[in-house]
Length: 357
Figure (spheres, rainbow, N blue to C red):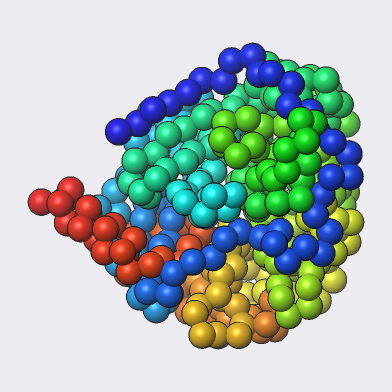
């Protein structure tokens, strides 16, 4: 079942300045479940979202034989392609699930351009509703049209890439309501002076159908994409893994005291160094139950065939080591990981077996 909503004129939702969580332990995505793990990802066999399950977080098996779990023609209304899936639990109520994807189909367009993103929600991880945001429409799609623009002419947007979600219970809307989903992603346009991909952020409301205009998260003077933010209890800071195009290639880390920064430029020595100068992107950090440290998944695409790896990191999300290729996944690509309860795990397995008969 798919219910797809096109964005029409939005009512002003109003961003409020400085209404962000600082050093709040609750400013993070809800974690639940100790039975297994869901790897939700773009398939390298096509621009659609696929699932794989694991009991230990390292060894996986495909659901639906690696085929699409959501029809991108029905949920990605701009290009009919779905890339870079990021999934998490609905944090404001603790019930339900959220996903964001890049609305893009390079297979059809033959260019590395796209024009928007999709916000999806589900009650069961199987049936999803979607709201598509076509950034070329500018003020028409944003719920705060009176806010300043970071793009001079929205009709010249070239990329809206790799969105991710971070729950911020301390964000305050103009109505006084507290709590919003911090959506961070990269954008680039062909407007004069807009020379590279920059990281921006918007807020989505609890209904996950309204989006504020993007604001600059940081600008280091060169292209940056594929940011992945996590709150670390080890030092009480927000840590970001990111692909930066300036200087040495690879996945780097930076950290800040709160979600909107300031995010300092990464240390040139603090990166996934065992890959040398090979190109890497699409990082996703997660923790395995019982482990103090972190696991970092990413794509190493210099080699042919390319590799989707999972490596170790310490409790500070540094000292990357021991890479291994993910096992049991057909066409692994940019995606994310979420812990599951036994009930959720078994429900997904049952659904997959029923659908592939």
